[in-house]
Length: 565
Ligand code: NAP
Image (cartoon, rainbow, N blue to C red; front, top):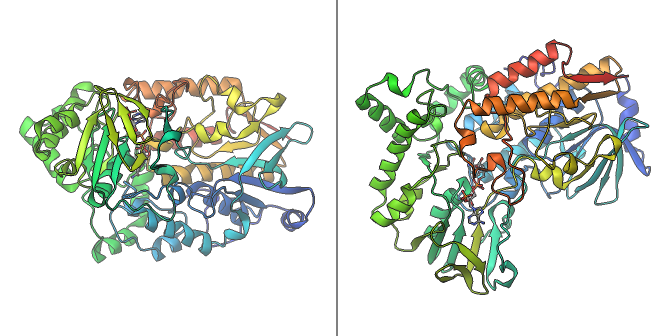
């Protein structure tokens, strides 16, 4: 399955390299003012749990996860909005590091719903006995690098202090909710929610008038479900969006059997392509086929559903002319589905190339506008002026509602990192160092922040990928690097300003090979958060290319990093 140095042989085998294992465990249990530990990890989602397991069970180190939530799951713990599900297919949205885990877990649907993913992550926490090393309801307050000891001093909101050799952020890329600073929100007499911080008890929309602000992946998933319950839904659209039909369905026994029997092949495909999905991008140009053939290919993929549509031709995301063909097909579909022409016009009036903003995958989103209880408001024509006691006031009208749902996205990639008080060498704060945009080497380390690693940080493929394989690649790289340091008795790893500059150039160069940076209002650039520096943040060269870069760096003796004993 995986061929990394640190992979399990067998299902759950302790890989003892740490000579001080027993000693370090004992130190961790000693109740002193500052607890000594090998590693502190922040966040108990896909990344943090696998990082804990890797350090603790493969390397035999002491490690602890600090998690602000009252349960594990990260993104899937917080994002409980109606319709929440993943738009990666379930057999690819999972860990592949353990054959036993792959074989024993059964997904029920093509695209897993949030409760099922959360069950899966809880199963992982139980199976690998991770819970004793996860501190729930605990927010990291500060992390400061002590240059005299080369250790991180980490403080939590419960007053605990840890001295850790390694500090690993596993905070997720889309975890800092972006509630827009629209005037008047505190005046609203009804209830309002952000989709990324949804109440655990759920929200009853029965008989309610609901405003939904935002038509990204989240809004597009939530709107059909809310509309099926509420008395009336008013959708406030600022930017019309492409969306692909998901074609949800239960998985057949045959498919489940196939996915298990071919797990190695599926994993091989996921880790050797651009987006980490279980299919390759077709190696043909959109202009290699006739108009009729192209139409038929698109039709078939539209019926099949999901991101395979985007993978139909190799140049959809690199050539504007090729992209136009895909965009026109989707716009035609929107007009076919939506019965009221003026609403269809609004939905199909899309100002950016297809997939240059993250394309949603939907379940009857466009069909929802044929319902009598759904209206669409064009914020480009009549912008929101304020929230009032009664609802949403645009430039021409006040919309009275009982509930406002902000499906307005996240302060992506950097938000959760700069919100934490992280201080590196020379007392330099991460938020100050990144005031002009994130600067990393490989998205794994930040210059001036020794022994700190960022799982799927800015500068890595992260959000442009199906996340689990990107996370596994990162955690494996970090774990191998730490293994190397422990074996060689090295105390410090850090990267340099030159490496950060070099990597920023690479990130920009590969982004410029695509249409992604042409969208000036995209969250990939930080443009959705007022005042955020606009820098293209993820690495757009693809997972396979990125993995090769990381492996080459390792093979060249960790080129671009410096070690100290
Ligand atoms: P998003 O893509 O950033 O969309 C936010 C929406 O809110 C956009 O329509 C945006 O309009 C609008 N908006 C933001 N501020 C506004 C304001 N002040 N006034 C009016 N409208 C405003 O956020 P998201 O939908 O939560 O998705 C974020 C990412 O999360 C996705 O791209 C995806 O990577 C991930 N996600 C994945 C899944 C999944 O796997 N199924 C589901 C949900 C989310 P503009 O476009 O004009 O800025």
